Length: 305
Image (cartoon, rainbow, N blue to C red; front, side, top):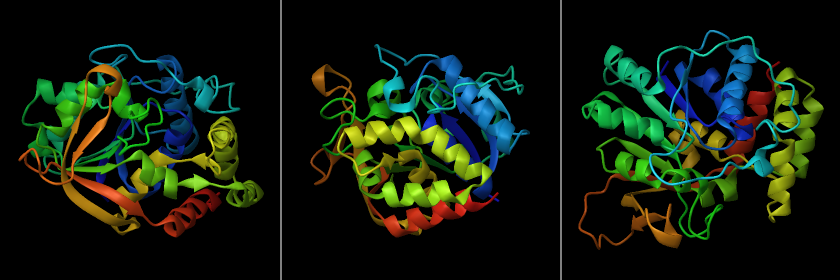
């Protein structure tokens, strides 16, 4: 089974992506990074999810803020705790004492060439790990990034949340030499939504997992529909599905990708479609994904007890 490190700002969809990862990968650890909601709640959410479904997987605390600049949390998207209507979250499970950055480096050295990073969050932890050990790209098999938007930013007109929170980190990671696949926002918006019909099917399953999904994503669903979406959108879950089965990505392209760090375009993903910069292609970018497969995989995941 492929070994992964799940790097997360754990909120509603992150928790479902983690649940999927537990079924399909050997999760060496979950590393927490500043992003979606208050840091302490992200930690509790990760510990709670693992306590329910995989209590032996360790949690490592990482960056509590971006490298530079300010950001804001988005409780209006994920709920006051980050897990929708799940508000009484008091896990007994505790995080490890080792810092997430050191854990990433240690695990890369323990399993050289094997670990993959499921980066469904701002890229601060991975950037700091690279700055501490510049040989890291040779030891990490692949980095799967949920981040960036072509033109439809979900936080600013051009900025997708993960890249917008820490564009400096994204820029460092993209130019470090990692083997990278990016799943941008628009692809997830067009593919990974749970509309009313699918929501009702999940609700009617009456499994422990389906109940967790419904409660964790109630706020996300309301928010997404208020912005014009057909239902809750699950970018992190789609990203780990593609990591598990690349055929779910029906159209990809090897391109040079960078990130803007200044002004109103801060966090914007800059894709060199025509090779205008002359820079090396540094990422495999997912352009289209299979919605039917997403729906099938999600139902399969949540129907399992």
